[in-house]
Length: 262
Image (tube, rainbow, N blue to C red; front, top):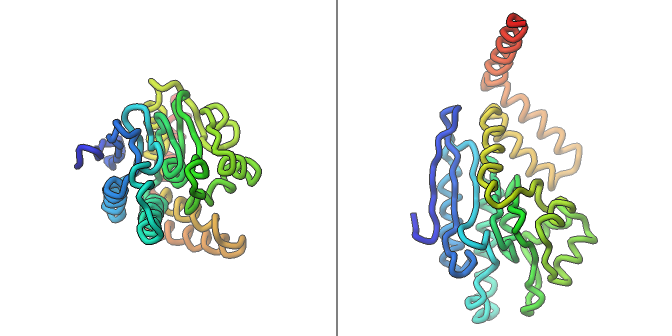
């Protein structure tokens, strides 16, 4: 644990855990410098082989979710250090996307630049109604790169072009309207909204849930025939675990008990 990043494991009814990762660099709107990027990358890498983790929630403290890359560090980059900085940020986002457990971005405030790319890398996104979104890089002489490439998939080419070319910020209502986030709630209800999703994820079969996330990643990049073939393989592998037999039996028992009650 770092004073700039806290990691909390919270028990779920299934016996698994949800991991809450909270950015705590409040003085800089939780901006990512090289050190903070490394901390967050290590946090996600440490979860990769932890089968008890049902889901991960990433959020921020104060007024920022992640307010972008640290402007002081950006101002000193040359070609070599710039390549290293952006490659390290890409490694962080790759670690989030490859996390076997579903990830939830609980966006509490400013979500800008690299912060928006981090949020886009998560599987589910809920935002406080006070959150703000944007890709301001062109206004400081830089292009939006790496996982900004996810934006056209989320919001369409036209809106993605507007976001990265104008650098104008979006409010939470607009972010929901265009599909950048799935849900907007009052700020005081943000954690409750994330908890509601955790309840949904905890009710799923853990093997099926991880298989489904793996398939989502493949659906993004593979042709339809290969994506379908991957799904058939995943279906068979989950059947081999016995999880469907157990869960369907429990479902039938619950349905029978409900009918008996009348």
